[in-house]
Image (tube, rainbow, N blue to C red; front, side, top):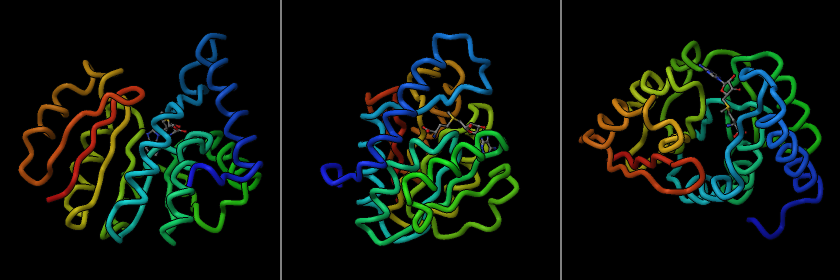
Length: 196
Ligand SMILES: C[S@@+](CC[C@H](N)C(=O)[O-])C[C@H]1O[C@@H](n2cnc3c(N)ncnc32)[C@H](O)[C@@H]1O
């Protein structure tokens, strides 16, 4: 999966990593920053997505499509597709360009809009990557968990980098009898939940 990425994917990932790094230090306003996952988190979510049971594969928070490119690799080897949700039109525009440049539009479907407005269209979730604004994490978790098939995986980014903002949700998830969960010290901290 990781050793046979196309030159286009490697080039676009590199471009996005450089832009994201610059965003973090050059005063780019918060909402314009890409705020991507780290490359090791990309590998981490792709491995989990490839191993997840059959079911819908979704991502909440696309930005310019960097994490979706990692998940697209899991789609390729598992014969599935990813639906990724992005609320901001400008980010959706960037993501469309990313997916076109890397020729992943056969396995990555972008939905422009608020995930919370589309949740009724989703069922039988096998894998979910949650990486939106922290104030909607708990609502997303509460809406997605009942739709997860047994053994399905939900991963949420920023579990350690935004621990203060997420503490009450993390406490609830770690005590939630519907899932087995832990926080992995990868990247910015990945909350990993497996539906029982
Ligand atoms: C941290 S960035 C995502 C980074 C992306 N996952 C990556 O690693 O390449 C969060 C994104 O979630 C989007 N977002 C926030 N709330 C959302 C919602 N309710 N529905 C869909 N997208 C949302 C933001 O506009 C932003 O682009």
